[in-house]
Amino acid sequence: MNHTPRFRTVLSCTLLVVSFGAAATACGDSDGHPLAAKPFDAAEQVAFNTPIGRAKVDPDKPLEVTTKGGKGGRITDVTVTDDSGHHLAGELSADGARWRSTAPLSAGAKYTVKVSTEDEDGAPGARTLTFDTSPAKRLLTVKFGPQAGKYGVGQPITAELSAPVKAKEARAVVERALKVQSEPSVQGSWYWVDDKKLHFRPKEYWPTGATVSATSNLQGVKVSDKIYGGASKPLKLTIGDRIEAITDAGAHHMTVLRNGEVINTIPVTTGKPGFSTRNGIKVVLGKEYFVRMRGTSIGIAEGSSESYDLPVYYATRVTWSGEYVHAAPWSVGSQGYANVSHGCTGMSTGNAAWFFKTVREGDIVRVINSNGNEMDTFGNGFGDWNLGWEKWRKGSALVADTRDGSDPAEAARLRPQV
Image 1 (spheres, rainbow, N blue to C red):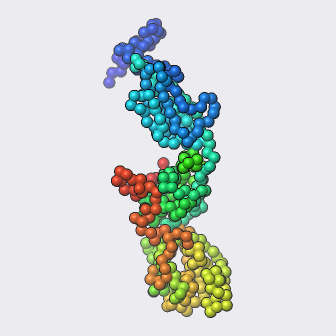
Image 2 (cartoon, rainbow, N blue to C red):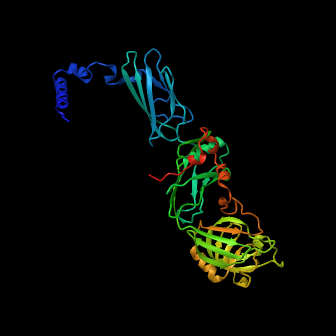
Image 3 (cartoon, rainbow, N blue to C red):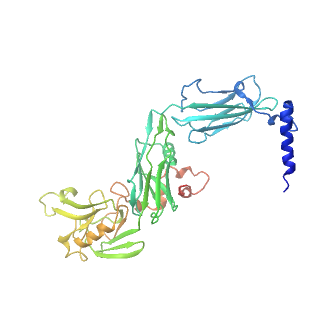
């Protein structure tokens, strides 16, 4: 392509600017269209409802930009961004006389407002305003769990709020601001356990080797009347191999799998009648090399025929109420044949040591064919996986927000961090 004609045109325009300053506008646009002119200062054309000077703006009040009476013209566009680059939504009236924010301002933030106008002749005007909003007096912060580290595929993410949130509208604001991202991406959702606690889990277990992060975008966001989000520390986890221990209480054996392959089969004993082990999926909560176990801790009266006080080694905890997988050398003769424990899963010291070394927090321990009750979903460890996916989704404050008929689970699909 020949660029010479374009070069000559630019050169001619430059000569006109130097020699004939008055003709510069004509060179910029041969038609002399008003929009080709430099925007004029619209200070006398528009007004803001913000305080004059350095006074801070109340974030509970909407932002308004209006035309001044008698000055003519109209507002053509308004762009409002905070210091983090987030845009504030708003609506411009049909006659261009008023723009009003439709989303709440953030507390403790700095905003830049850029207004475009035109006068009665169609010439463009512009005005820029900056202001700060007042900091919030009541802050809602989030503490993510567990601690950063490496976990098994069943580990839920927890979010502990600094204050209760009861209204569904406020819960939706909180939930939208709590972001969980996974690489590789998975489908997942938050569940409101109570007014101050949420759990997040994928539809299926986390992928082996995944990297998971949890962050809060609540800072400065209005949650409810006079309550705004505060800063919260992010969380990052890595996921290890898929370790699953399946305890068949009826067959008195535990089968341990790594990434779907059987790596050990262990004879065990579980809870005897009256103390049957809970059925269902549990998640490893922690490991304790030594625990002193007493019957009084589960309501057995001291001195009764069921009373016990034993030193226990290689104890892997699966409920907060005291259910463990542990070494039980006193019951080796029953392991693989009968259930004689008070609810724990007992095995030989050697097998317990192997199990203790093999598993980590977040790994799966599943009990089947027991006469015990089902594992609680919440309150006694992580029974999250015992709730079907459709019921789990209903624990989200955002499920009812899918007014367009889209799948709320799709709306909760996680994206890789970028």
